[in-house]
Each structure stands twice: as structure tokens, then as C-alpha cells.
Amino acid sequence: MQQTSKYIKLSFLGFAILLMGLSWVSYQQVSVNLNSTNAVEHTQKVLLVSEEFISNMKDIETGQRGFLLTQNHTFLEPLNQGKVEALANLDSLEALVKNNAVQTRCLVKIKELGLSKIKALTENISLIDKGRAIDLSTLEYGKKTMDSLRTRVVTFQKNERDLLDIHTNSKNYGQSLMPIYQVLLSFASLVLLGISFYLVNSELKRRYFTEKNLEKKVEELNRSNTELEQFAYVASHDLQEPLRKIRAFSDKLQIKQKDLLSNDGRDTLDKIASSAARMQTLIDDLLNFSRMVNHKAQEIEKISLNDLIEDILEELSDEIHQKNANINIAKLPTLMGYGFQLKQLFLNLINNSLKYSLEGVNSEISIHYSEVKAKQIKHISSPDDHQLFHKISIIDNGIGFESQYVEKIFVIFQRLHNRGEYQGNGIGLAICKRVMANHNGFIFAKSKPYEGATFEVYFPTTTT
Image 1: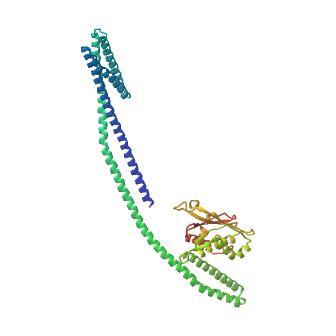
Image 2: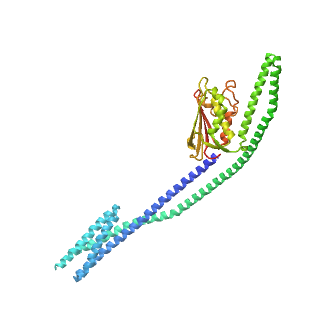
Image 3: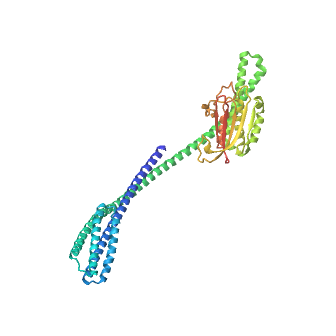
């Protein structure tokens, strides 16, 4: 599953990079096309303004000839209008080619010639207005200036047309590439879609078959658990009868025949009685554990934990008095749960704190309560970090244990101490873990040798 997920992620990443690359290239090409289009439009505008300029200069020259021939000031109107427009054309061209050094230099000469031509025309008109004869050299100079101006403008326009060809070719080339990029993008998108569909479909099929297999295994496991529960329950009950007979006969021997037995016989009889009693305790514990597993037969009810613990303390009053224990209990919540199981949970935890107290030290047991969010619980992973839990901590000042055993202590029949040191069969904490599982909760322990132990239980605030 992890390998498939890895391939899916790598495939998506690879094609995402490919699509981004093609998109970037397409964007760049679009930018180039746009720049080429703008350049073409700019060049066309330069050509248009240059044509307008030479046309206005011709109008100026025509106006001058008409005035010189007729001395009618009406012919000066197109001359004056042409002069204004020609100067405006020069200003426009200057702004348009400011980034083109070659054209700027060419325009400088055009401007010089244009101004010289206008100056010569103005001088000829001034002479006529004063009644003086026209200087033929001035007319000759004006003609040469106009010819040079035309030549310069032709060169200027040729440069622009060369630029226009370059920009037009670039634009056409870019436009020819766009369909290719679009096809590549479409093809890459289709391939990505196809591969994604294949991978997702394969993963869904795999998960479908996995779920079916899991359902089958869960069904088998449930059937196996049911059979094991029945076996444990029946075996425990079936063991009761021969065990009762063993205990009855051993009691009878101890009462009636003990004095007739040798010392070795009496020791053997005591061991039989002790083993039978221990077997009876073990069977009772197994029955309790079986009840924890088969919790479906029990009903959920509203449980006040403070009342529940008060009842437990009453049951453990002799042990509490013997250990001279001081037990502090915070205000605890009311839960929806299995009453019998919750009683077994707190009975085992409090009894453990009393059982594993330090010799010669008064036992101190504190039960604290707080409400926490799932993200504050280090040892669990929850789909909802903000899910609320009731946290109940049972803290004692007993002998504690090494931190390496925090998981082992919850395994059935696992003991950290010899039976001669402390009583028990190693079932109590296994029952606690089963109770918390039945309530969709968690139990954790932390401790250090001779520094006491802390057991933390977490119940979800929602109904079990």
C-alpha cells in the first residue's frame, strides 16, 4: 500500500512538473507573441507617422509654390497647417524611436533637414511680403534640402520595414508554435488524467479486495473470539467442580487425618491446599476477565464515579486501615458505561496502589480529574484533535517500577514481582486495559522505582 501510494505521489508530482513546464513555456511563448505583435504595431505606427511627416512637408512645399506664383495669402493656410503638423510628427517620431539608437540618429538628421526646409520657406515668404525679389540660391537650397529629406525619410522607413519584417516573422513563428504547445498540454493532461484514473482505480480495487479480506478475517476473528470466550467460561466453570472436590478432600484430610500424617505428609497437604486456593483465585480472575471480554451482555448505565469509588473504598476499608492510607479524591464526572466493569477498573487500580506501597511509609493515593483534548494526549492518534476526553489520574507513593515495563504490566499473567513478595495473578491490569477498550478509552502508566506510580485513564466525553 505504501509503495502504491508512493508511485501515485511520484506520478502526480512528475506530471505536475511536466504540466507546469509546458505551461511556463506556453506562457513565455504567449509573451513573446504579444511582444512581437506590439513591436509590429509600433513599427507600423512609426511608418505611418513618417509618411504623415513627408506628406506634411510636401503640403508645405506646395503651399509655398502657390504663394510664390500668385502671392495670394490663401495658399499660406495649408503651409502653416502643414508646418504645425510636421513639427508634431517629428515630436511623435522622437518619442517612438527613443529606444532605437540607429533610428534616433537618423531622425536627428531628418529633423535638422526639416527645420532647415521650413526656415528656407519662411525666408522666401518674408521676402515676398516685403516686396523684394526672391533669392534663387535660397530656392535651390530649399530644393536640395527637400531632396535630402526625402532620401533620409526613405532610409528611415527602410530601417523600420526591416524591423517590421523581423517582428512579423517572429510573430508568425510564435503563432505557428502555439498549436503545438496546446496539443502537448492537452496530450500531457490526458496522459496525466489516464494514469491518475488507472492508479486511483487500481488503488480502489486493491482497497476493495483488502476490505473484503479484512471483513472475512474480522468475521473469522469474531467467531474465534466467541469460541474462546465460550471455552474460557465453560472451562472455568468445569474446573470449579474438580477443584471444589480437591479442596473438600484436602480440608477433610487436614481436619481428620492431619495428626496421623508425617511432617512431610503434612507439608505436602498444606501445599495442596495452598495450590487449590490459588487455583480458585485464578479461576475467579479468569471469569472476571471473561466478563470483561463479553461486555455485550451488559447494559450501559449512568455511573457517578465519586459514588462508585466511595463503594470501592468501603470494600477496601481493611486494607486502607492496615496501610494507614490517606486517599484524596477530586470531584469526578458522571459517565455512561458498564457499571460492573468500571468498578473492576478502579478497584484494581486503587488496590494496586495499596498493595505495592512502600514498607514503613503511610500510603498516599490521589485521584485527580481534568478535561483534555485529543491532541494533548501524547500516546494516541485521533482523527479529531479537538475531541474531548475525561482524564482521571490515580497517583500513589508506592514502590513504582522501571519505565521499560509500562506496556508489559497490562499483559495478562505478566508479573513484575515474585508471588511470595506480592499476591496476585497478573490479571488485574489486563482487566483494566480491557475495560478501557470496551469504553473506547485509553489507559497509560508512568513510574520510577521507589517514586510511586501514576495511572492515567481517558474516557471520551461522548456516550460509549
